[in-house]
Image (cartoon, rainbow, N blue to C red; front, side, top):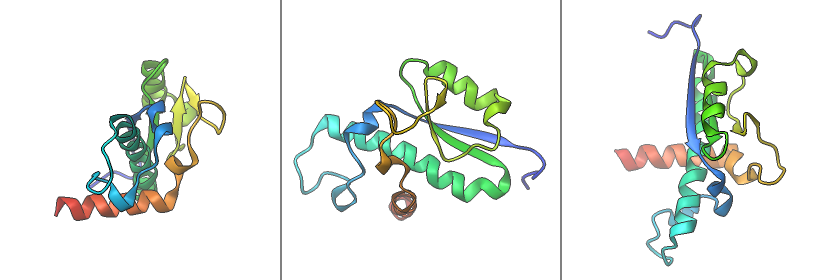
Length: 131
């Protein structure tokens, strides 16, 4: 059983490529539309952020903080920030870049990557796919 007095941190690695595409639920596997490698990569990076958003909601009661981060410039420092800094303890379901929470500035984070309804939808799609 998880000790509720303890805390844990999970970081989902994403990148600025998430800005290229939201998750296209109507054709997530490119069965009906032409495959585009850049768009597919962007969709996968958006999915990583959405995972963090939904996992944060599901695991909050257990004291688990879950965030996503840009692996680009400052990625290592940002990973260390999320893993070890008391400054982000209790911060969860967010996207970080260059050692700080990203906002809607350039490059920032796309609104679709933080959409709680899309995060829940992707979680359920993932569960169905694994069954």
